Each structure stands twice: as C-alpha cells, then as structure tokens.
Image (tube, rainbow, N blue to C red):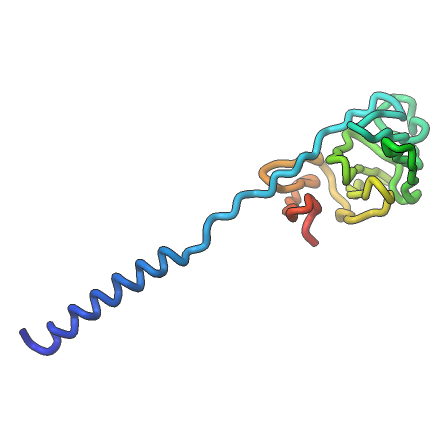
Length: 158
C-alpha cells in the first residue's frame, strides 16, 4: 500500500468522526412559543375575561363593535387601572392570557395593536399601523400580514 493510500484511511476515519460530532452538536429544532391567549368577544362595553373585568367605555357607533374608551381593567381583588387615551377607540376581538391584554385600536383609518399589562394598563408593545386581521398562529402574533414572533413571556419580540 502506498503512502497516499495509508493516509486516506485515517482521513476517512477523521471525516466520519467529524460528521458524528457535528450530528451530536446540531442544535435541536426550537418549538414555537405556545401562549395561553384566549379571545375575548365584547358584546357590550363591559366584559369578563377570566378573572378580569374590562370596561371599554361607551360604544363608538352604536353597533357593539367599537368603543371609545378609556379602557379600565379591574382585577379579581378589585384593584383597577386605566389605559392611556391613545389606546382607543377599541375595536374587534381582544385577547388575554391573564397577564397581558391585546387591544386593537382604530383611529383615522389606521389600526394598531397594543399589548397592555393587565395590572398597570401600561403598553408593553405597540404594532406599526396595519390593515387586516389580528390573530395568533404557531407562536406568532399576526397584525395583518406581518408576523411578530413571541418571546417566552408571550410578548412580541422587538
């Protein structure tokens, strides 16, 4: 056996070992974040969402599909907070996981989605303007055609 043939055997062994180590070190596929957001369909200006009571204010146009605000959240223990006037008028389905409230607003033809803390009513995230629906799918929050990945705390990534 010539020197080249002798060298190929260890090289083949080295390549096999490298492939084996690379396969072991390959990162595992990350599963999407699953958040417990539940839809809240407000039929009137006041609605219960699990342990929260939401007061959306008076109807904006009398059809029960939009409200002027201000949004007030009441906790089970009776403590309340009121969202800033920028979180209005409120429209459509809201989503809650008990700690966060997803609120769609519409002003001057521009829609935005706010993620509010249910204890302080402070905005934790705000979308850009969008058209279309708001929905959650495969660990992502969609505002129209824009997908926003959710972090482990169920908040959209910046």
